[in-house]
Image (cartoon, rainbow, N blue to C red; front, side):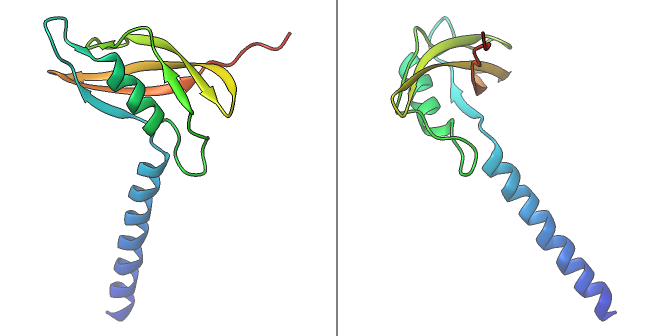
Length: 116
C-alpha cells in the first residue's frame, strides 16, 4: 500500500512539472478583437509580442516591435513586424492560430534569412 501511495505522489509531481514546463515553453498570446473589422489593435499586438515572444531559456525578448497593422480575427491571418533584438533588426512574423468569437490566439516566429 505504501508503494502505491509513493508511486501516485511521484506521478502527480511529474504531471504538474510537465504542465508548468509546457507553459514556460509556450509563446502564444490571446487578445480580443475589436471594432467592425474585428481586429486586434496594432499597439496591443506590438505590446504582446514584446512581452510574450521570449520565454526563459528559449530566446531573448525584442527591445522594440513595430507592426504595420493589427491582426484580423481570421484563422491564419499574419502580420510581418520589424523587431529589434539587442540592436539587430529582424522580421517577426505574428500569426493567428485560433479564433473563438472575438478571442484571437496568435504566436510568433523570427523570419530566418537564407544564407548566400
